[in-house]
Image (cartoon, rainbow, N blue to C red; front, side, top):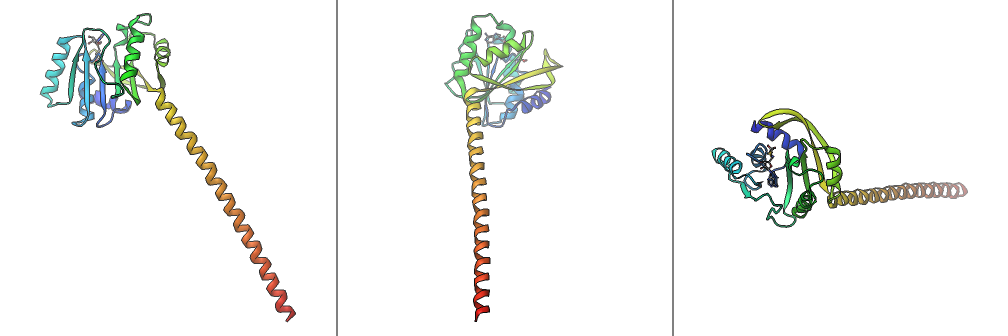
Length: 223
Ligand SMILES: C[S@@+](CC[C@H](N)C(=O)[O-])C[C@H]1O[C@@H](n2cnc3c(N)ncnc32)[C@H](O)[C@@H]1O
């Protein structure tokens, strides 16, 4: 099963050396594959309010020789204890049904996740038992922009089933991408202008050469 989880997470966008927060990680269906992908120079913060699930996860990590998982035990209150702008990827898989759309803790959770996200972080959500359209709007209202859907066979309750993962980026990352894109467009226009100028210059030089040739010919004819 680890292999399946790894394939999904690679598609989603986890990379070597990433710092990942798996919020509501359970027994590590995804935290373990994530730890394998990020490698020794990356970290997976595995956060859950269920101590027994975290114990189970750490046992599994130990038996696989993974030393890059840091467990975060919480009381269920929304406080990751992580630094501002410290996380590359946040996983929220099969967790949102604990935070119904009307739950007062949902905006608190989204604000906390935004606080710990690096400016170009990825927030990846596997929405189960919740209306995903409205959840998507809520997430977009808290500093994230929806980017794409990943559809495929996903791990759920220790088996594979067809499902969809929604991916978001922090808005600042999208703004930065937009800035780079418009900068590139400006550069392209400049290059085109130079190219036109060069064409014009070449035409001017050719005309001059022809004129000189004609003058030389008429002077020679005169002689
Ligand atoms: C259905 S499990 C999903 C586990 C894992 N993400 C997966 O996809 O296999 C949901 C997990 O979220 C945890 N959880 C729910 N509310 C939480 C909260 N407020 N703080 C921390 N963990 C929470 C539960 O303890 C449970 O382990």
